[in-house]
Length: 367
Ligand SMILES: *[C@@H]1O[C@H](CO)[C@@H](O)[C@H](O)[C@H]1NC(C)=O
Ligand SMILES: *[C@@H]1O[C@H](CO)[C@@H](O)[C@H](O)[C@H]1NC(C)=O
Ligand SMILES: *[C@@H]1O[C@H](CO)[C@@H](O)[C@H](O)[C@H]1NC(C)=O
Ligand SMILES: *[C@@H]1O[C@H](CO)[C@@H](O)[C@H](O)[C@H]1NC(C)=O
Ligand SMILES: *[C@@H]1O[C@H](CO)[C@@H](O)[C@H](O)[C@H]1NC(C)=O
Ligand SMILES: *[C@@H]1O[C@H](CO)[C@@H](O)[C@H](O)[C@H]1NC(C)=O
Ligand SMILES: CC(=O)N[C@H]1CO[C@H](CO)[C@@H](O)[C@@H]1O
Image (cartoon, rainbow, N blue to C red; front, side, top):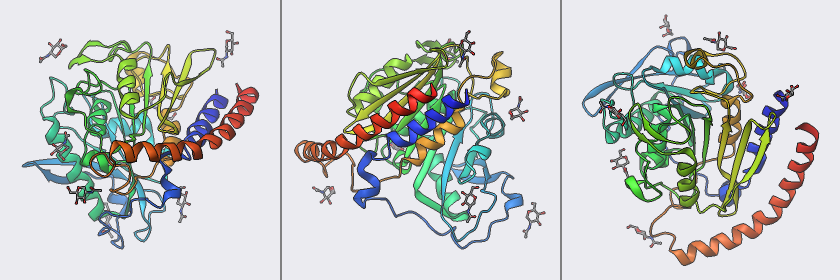
């Protein structure tokens, strides 16, 4: 079991280390509000709720700081959106992201009435929760020392659906370097690659999705869910493959007696920008090799993969490019873009051969 997890995180890290041309292109985003840097933080009170006013409402969130937090160092931020009905604390206990992301400032925002926008039971609109996310990040940056090039989002169920809405947003969504939704109910992105006003901020939107094949709440094959129509996961993934210009079909690795399926797409020459883990027998849970809340709630048992760990390897591979690199719009006309593409795929071509050989060697030893 641990071997699978190890291999998976190796794959996630290696596969995409050349993606986006980000580290070597000198286009790493260096902007962002640094007012929280140099400001002493009280670690023992950081887990108390912080208040932020957004759209006329007082909203709340909690924070988990790295244990050695120093206000003179910039830290990545991971925002985790809870499921419904729920609060940030439930996601914190369920995912144990504090433990798996000890290097990051982990932020747990609370939805209004224990929900995020997008479902028919939500008390907020999508623009309201998007604006809250923008206000939340601004507040976090004034309190703590943030590396704005390394801001990431994850979430569970209704919260994961909202992460999908964030990935489709061209302003606040562009603050994030990568997204890792778990068991998502994608109410706001349910009708195709161009529907629902999905406007990602950049040409490449790194996404890693986890989903149980036996999910009884947000069905793998889609349909009417608790909060409206949910797209089949395979369709939703294919729309992101389309938006990211990925090659299809994706590579597939099957593990744990053919019950865990890891799909990995190469998009514009960057391997692993879009990834997916399907766990056949898993219900509506946060995938974990240890027992946890969502498993108890869903009457399920521990599974073969540790989502909280795998997603850290994925996040590590992505840094937000600067605003003028890889953005959609006028900066890259179709002609200019495809030229970049060709140069990039030449570069990535031989890197991929190396990666493929390494992976083959690893696979034969570990699987
Ligand atoms: C830090 O927060 C704790 C808990 O709220 C409080 O008891 C303590 O006085 C605070 N320390 C400082 C230096 O503000
Ligand atoms: C702080 O802790 C993290 C996680 O344990 C570690 O990766 C990092 O090197 C530490 N930083 C310092 C300055 O000690
Ligand atoms: C992105 O979110 C902002 C709120 O921060 C909103 O004003 C804007 O309309 C959204 N864009 C899209 C394409 O949904
Ligand atoms: C929400 O949508 C679901 C699925 O379509 C439906 O069963 C439910 O009645 C709807 N609830 C509300 C409050 O509209
Ligand atoms: C695969 O199945 C066999 C036979 O049921 C079992 O002995 C083995 O432990 C399983 N391996 C994994 C990784 O689950
Ligand atoms: C893109 O548009 C912005 C404002 O609309 C303009 O300032 C900029 O020069 C344009 N860039 C290119 C490469 O056309
Ligand atoms: C409710 C529950 O089972 N929580 C568990 C989540 O996982 C950690 C680590 O294995 C346990 O300590 C918790 O008890």
